Image 1 (cartoon, rainbow over the protein chains, first blue to last red):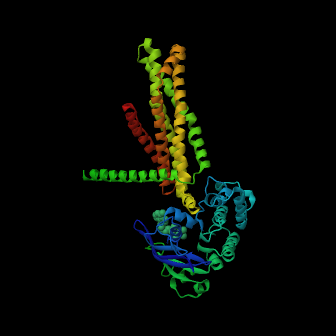
Image 2 (cartoon, each protein chain N blue to C red; image 1 turned 90 degrees about the horizontal axis):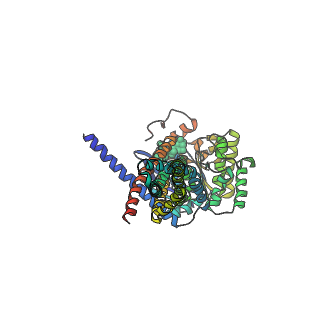
Image 3 (cartoon, each protein chain N blue to C red; image 1 turned 90 degrees about the vertical axis):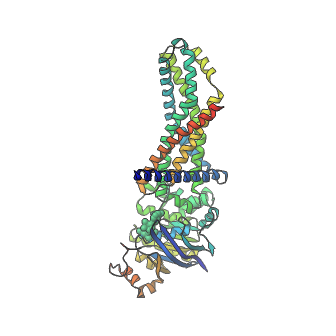
Length: 255
Length: 258
Ligand SMILES: Nc1ncnc2c1ncn2[C@@H]1O[C@H](COP(=O)(O)OP(=O)(O)OP(=O)(O)O)[C@@H](O)[C@H]1O
Ligand SMILES: [Mg+2]
């Protein structure tokens, strides 16, 4: 069964076309990685799934239910089952680390203080953070620590779908691989469906069941890691070789 | 010439659009008050922040307003009538106008700006989006507690301001102008009218609503990083101050008509 289905989604900001006929099907328990140049709309595609941005056209289904244009109560219900790691963390800076991590448990799900604190500490442990930072504020942490706190917050509510927007950017290689393992574990052990946006090819190889290349508002290519290595698709080849020569010119003219 | 007309035209269209959005935002917030959940903790925190911590500012403002008023009115009247006229004038001016309007403007500067900056920062750093993904309605979580705190705490602040302002007038009248304390107090009590105090408190409540909704609206709709937040902050203070003055006239007319 397809857990998430994007069908012909388009999204523009004024005259900037970001998503144009974007379609993507994701099976339950799948780990899909979206790769693509900076500013091609990867974050926008995640935000459309959460209803933070409304597509101009097209449909996005979760568990075969339409999510575009639904009421805000219904949207809250759906979002209860989706965790999101924002690209820049988006931690609440008026709250401590533990309050951040437990927020969705307490405010969203109404779980008691003690129980949610226990879950929060477990989640922080999973991302490699210990108890010494529980009562610190996000502004007192390093960039990498903030990212990991945000990651803990995204997984704390135990959602069925988790969206990771550049989970390993700005982390050292060892922490990055710990985070990748965490993502793989969450998918394998808990059957969670994940979409991960990343620029890190090492990560892609570790976590992806399927890789999707976003270019000019569409999924230009999709396949497994092995297929990615073997494909003749010039876009994919250029991307994995990191070459400036090829069909892709995203610095300019990505419209 | 044509250019000017065009500019004015687009300014009017912009204003209408902003007013429309504001009204929509207010309605959504007011409707939100009626349904659960209600975040009591945040509401109490905001009452302390908006109400309690504004006390020094409002107190100072009304104290000096009362003191100045005593000096100024003494300069302009027959000294024989001073002990009846001055308390009358001070009570009337403080309770109906000066405490609510000056207090309201001070709070607009203090609270309007801080609400706009706080919510604006949350907007541009995606914290508001994060609230939504954690199944929390940002209007209920951020906006409603602040609006309610404004509506409820401003009248209390102004009531305290009334007392301090009248006291300021008394201190100057008795110690500096040499008026008789007993008859001054008597005249003050006689001059107090329920409708006057109530009209002042009604104003305060409306100003509390204006200030908080403006701060929230500007912050909520800010964009474009730190600069956008700065703009939202300025707009919140400017617009709430202007709207306070306009609302003051309208409410005064309603009460004077009574
Ligand atoms: N709320 C918004 N308002 C206006 N334009 C936006 C908004 N959000 C995104 N954009 C624009 O949409 C385009 C795609 O943005 P997006 O954040 O999805 O890029 P991205 O693929 O995630 O890039 P990166 O890898 O750098 O994070 C950008 O040109 C951006 O300026
Ligand atoms: Mg992005």
